[in-house]
Length: 603
Image 1 (cartoon, rainbow, N blue to C red):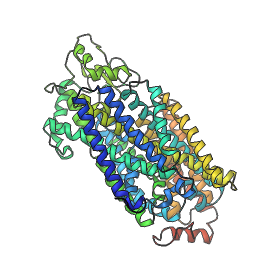
Image 2: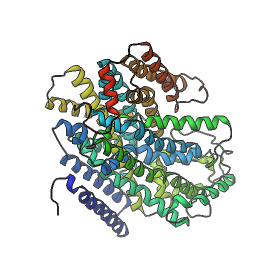
Image 3: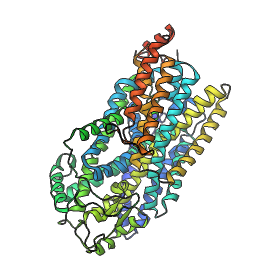
Image 4: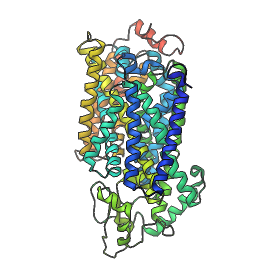
């Protein structure tokens, strides 16, 4: 059945894997009908999928530098597109984005637009050209293109800041899922999630991460789409909800008026939880609302094109042409989930608000709501709370508190779907968070082991020593990330937005101008990276921690606008004020933009 190597049989391998996963879902459904408990089904879903990823990670183990850092540069475009989509669709996309739209309404669509639009920038400005360059990491490109260890070191600092912030959000998501599926404290769940992440990435580096991410994409996209299609069909909006949930939006608007959403505000606060106070489909007609939408889209778009763990995925394809093709595949695979998220948020909200549905909660007796099994279980882990603020015994809109990050995970239970769907969604959320965390931890460890240790500290280090350093760093950074995540300093979506702003403040213009402007030089790059990053960080401190008022509506989710503006001005000004790059460097920049031929570093 299998002839040749793994790449020759890759379609058969993942076809069998997909079929096996569908059979596993069917088996779980049969066990549920046979009386197996919901807790047991949830545990089997999470344990089975993590075991599969760990086996793939073990089988992909390697001691070769090319395989560890760039998967041997032999990943076909289609599968690199799937791996990139899994790398990209993090816990924030799977677990938190629909929750953000559920609570924040129209304004949170800026995340969807920005995250999708960012791939146009990746495809047109960066990915094919960085692949042609032939580097191992993003700081590797910066260090060689501009020259000098200071430039490389500045890029490493920004990469570590952005990726570390991002990875804590992913481990936060794994902790949230594990705590609910296994009924364990969140602080224990984050360490459980970290264990699964390390099993996938530690032995095989980028090669192991790539093949586990392809497997994780298959799980997460099935897990995200199935409950929405089921819910839509059950509510009479058809089996393709993406084109038919307009009537549901209209119905939600009617119910918001009836339940006084935006008028009845909470009389008390619950740490980490919130009630519905924002209208679902109201865009805001003042200039500030429009400006805030546009600036959030810009921060997410330019952050997408600056995040090292995404850009390094395109270093793994066999050619520049396949790097460009894999961007198109990535966009298609990401679109499938992002096009579904607004429908999921709308249909879930309808389930909660509509008193004519058996699942409706608002307006019911609080005692009855508190008796619901799913309400009790999410309340037990501190992610949901019902408070009778006015003492009338009936649930008002401002008395039902949820954590935004649980909306997707709780949707099957809210909608009254079989528990097997809840287990499937938990497995999908775990796959999404693990796939991104794998990529992020690898990006940090690779930058520190390759760019800081090998290129700056010990250039004579042999292959074995370099890979041991990379693996030790992977474990140490993962453990520190889990500790920070356990402190619950911010929401998943908030932490992810900060990561995008850190990345675009320090890296966007130095990367883009490094490809497209021959006059950009080392001094300008250092000024652009350091000045942009520090400006963004200081502005974040000002609006978030020092009590400052946002300037022009630029709050802590949009501080990248300040950082990127400073980065562009400093880079252009300093480059023009200092000596232009030598002829060899300028020829190298010309060569990057020629799609054919050997890589620049391979010549």
